Each structure stands twice: as structure tokens, then as C-alpha cells.
Amino acid sequence: MDKLITFTVPCYNSAAYMDHCIETLLTAGEEAEIILVDDGSKKDDTPAKCDQWAEKYPTIIRAVHQENGGHGEGVNTGIRNATGTYFKVVDSDDWLDTEALKRVLDKLRAFAESPAPVDMLCANYVYEHAADNTRKVMGYTNAFPVGRIFTWADTHPFLPQQCLLMHSVIYRTALLKEHHVPLPKHTFYVDNVYVYQILPYAKSLYYMDEDLYRYFIGRSDQSVNEAVMARQVDHQLRTTRVMIKAHNVTAISAENPKLGRYMRSFMSMMMTVASIFSIIAGTEEALEGRAALWQELKAADPKLYRYCRWSFTNVGTNLPGKEGRKLSVSLYHMAQKLYKFN
Image 1 (tube, rainbow, N blue to C red):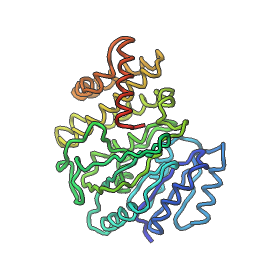
Image 2: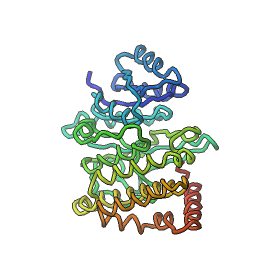
Image 3: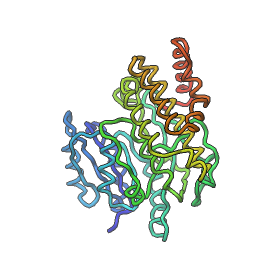
């Protein structure tokens, strides 16, 4: 039986919470392929858990063990081994809403049986905040047509807080295998690269107003924890450099203005995040890295540089001097409380 969808679950020392994630994916039944990628886990029984799940559900789950390569290499491994028509990454501490998943699978099944399956299906994701037990839905009804196949020409402007993240996209596997550039090893935040690098190749799109992906926020060691992001700002800088090199956004904008508009906005957001966490880190190395990143963007795409540099968020996060940097961090924290993005 051909698989409709491949779920790849990168696992690294995640024995304490990975079961819930897997249980929600199993509700897809035999149409699903679940690839558990044990990324060199050493501190707990993640490797054994992966094998136990694969032994229990041999027609659905596969366990792949590899030397530690980071989240990106877990995704790379999933793509290399995927056999499903469609592909989705689900982090081991997150999960999918099972009722929404049923409806998404119904739509994917119809696409898979059609002469030209859509390249990307997008659905909502939900921030699940452990600290105060609140949820925040990130949807796209203002930006995407609902319930019909469309192209980027049919889209509307995104709000500042809206981004297409790994959580919101399901790509056609063949598209990924053809155009995916392997994500860098031992690097956090590569999920941004994963989505961004494929967007220009996704010609047919479909959006479902379903709260599918549940994105857990709250572990102290989580990569999106503010203190962790500040310590790992070099990863943020590295990821943003990869994105700068991935595409010439000015050229894309000339051919596909609405896609270019989104990619400009997304790159501006990435530059904002890299800048603000360089400031929060506060080291000379981090501040020099921020300056070098801006120069790299300027050299690669001067028009994109001007757009990003003088966007509202980057004017606010690149204020000069020590006092300016303090104000930049204050503005970031205000936005964080307003939008609850981590």
C-alpha cells in the first residue's frame, strides 16, 4: 500500500514526552508512515523507545538511528527515507490535533488521487503555552483563500506576526526531494530554512482553516526559550546566512510580486530576530556577528537590504549606542507580550 503521508519526528533525548506526539500521528492509520529519527540520544531511553514503537507498529513506524547531527539532520534523514506522497515534520514535544488531522488527510487523499497533486497544503498552528495554560492560534484566513487551490498571485498581505513555519506546512514529498538543499548540521532554527527554501517551487497551494499543529512552549531547555536563544545566537546568525544565500528575493519579486513580498517580510523578521538576540547576548562577538550579517545581506541583495534595514521592526531593533540597544530589547519584550510568540 502506497503511503499518503510521511511524518518525520526528530527525537533527541525526548523519551519523557515523545509518546504523546506519536500517539496522535498513529490516528492516521495505515495511510501514514512515521519515521522516528533518533539523533544520537544518550541521556535517556529514546533509542529503545523508537525501536519499541517500530516493533509494535511495523507497517507504520520506522526507527532510524544516527550519530548526532541536530534537528536539521533529523529532517534531512526523514526526507531521504520518505515514501509518502506528502511530508510533514512534527517535533517530538509537539503533537497534532486528531480531529483536524482526519479532515486534512481526507483532503490530501483527494489531491493524491488527482492528476496534479498540490505542492503545499497549509493549516493553522497553535501555541500551547505551558506557563499560563493558554493557547494562541496562528491562522491565515486574511492571507489565503480558504477551501480552493490557488497560487501566490491569489494571496493577500500577511500580518506582521504571521509567518509560514514548519508547523503550518505540508509539502509534496517529490517537490522536497527535487529541490530540498540539506539543512546544516548541529544548528538550531533550521526549520525556517526548511520552509523558506521550497516556497518558490511550490506552485499550487491549498489552505485549510484547521488548528492542526500544536506547538508546545514552556520547557526551560527549549530552543525558543529566550535565554537559550541568546546563548545560541550564533545559530540564529548562521541560519539567516543560509537563507540569504538560498534565493535572490529581488529577482523573485520581479517575477512573482506577492511571493516576493512575503519572502521580503519573512527575511526582515529573521534579520530582526538575529539582531535582537545579538543585543540580548551582549557579547562583542555577537554584536560583530550582527554587523557582519547586515553587510552580507547588503552585498547579496542591496534592494532587499534596504527593505529590511528600514522596516519598522529593524529600525526599532538597530538603535545606536548602549541606550539604544536597551530600548530595542524593551520594544522586543513589548511585542513578545502582545503576540506571545515564544
